[in-house]
Length: 488
Ligand code: SF4
Ligand code: SF4
Image (cartoon, rainbow, N blue to C red; front, side, top):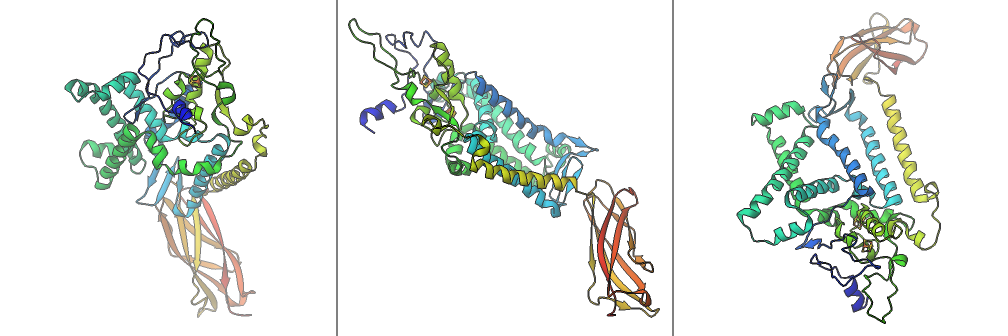
């Protein structure tokens, strides 16, 4: 790039005043109400906030995260609706208990969301980062609070540059207290998904928090305060692994916020021509830098699609507002694919191989999840047959096989589990007990099955072992096993 071009693209620090002799396509920047602000000051980006459809969409999506804070207090049949009970290795979700043997379902959920991320990236770039990511949302809330307590970006930059004073502390302290409160609530709410949330509050107010609880809350709160309050876009650029790999999921058909260079260039603010001078031919970009001022990561999208762009669309809002003010068509910056600018037609989403592969795997994961949930029973029975010896010849002429019946109680109430056996007319069985199995626990029942030897026609006879919850007789599970006898 030539030196003159570098100079043209170098981020400029504006002082806030707009040159009086500058007109913008016959209007001054003042006329259209543009105040140019420095967004970078000593490394901190103080992005301007403006209204717009993408800003509204961002807030709507961000509100989903409220679920993190209310989730631990939801109740279901008197119990915490969502609870990761690590001690008992169980996951409870709205009355459903997922035990370690059902962990494949959680793997399917993770696979589904990983592929959803990949598919959304292939379609619309870092759309996760721009709207849904908890870090983006927390930074958005933190900077919103910053603006409420410390004022607009220009004021904040001046305040940051001032030497430390009591006055400065007085202005900044409420913001930090608000940040710390949100950071604490983030850490606390996270831990409240792993223990009873109300008991956790009780332990907190009585200073009886456990070591691991306290440490986890403190570490998460500290990380939230540090990353959302201070590191902000640096997390997206330097620490987040997704930002590193997302490039591999996009292609020339991925739509991302893109500056229409053909329409915008040569950019510039037309000076009032001196008498006899010709007005230079300019593109639609008036170089007001509003798109840069609003960018939370400090990107100048006019330099092309960049690694730092989180696809939040705020520069589109900003530029559309400017275009409206100077009576030009909106969309100088818009969601568009590289191929669109190359004059190629974009194929429909379902005809893009990358999207098809991602959505096929997603569909498989979703189907497996739904099947798993639909067929999930509150009881699960497995039977272990004793193999040494395979059978015993009894003195009364019968043949005996021994089994151990394992009963997993996935319901939320105690199970009174009775074992019965069918499969042969002359069969008798002795179960050592009716087992009381606590919710989420595994019960074990010893079982002996006998068949008179002269009634045995097969070396291996299929039998069915049935377990019924006497507290709730609809809860039944069957297990098919075999009864072994001597060779015929
Ligand atoms: S692209 Fe739009 S917002 Fe950005 S400098 Fe040009 S006119 Fe202003
Ligand atoms: S360049 Fe635009 S879309 Fe990208 S992060 Fe900045 S404001 Fe958001």
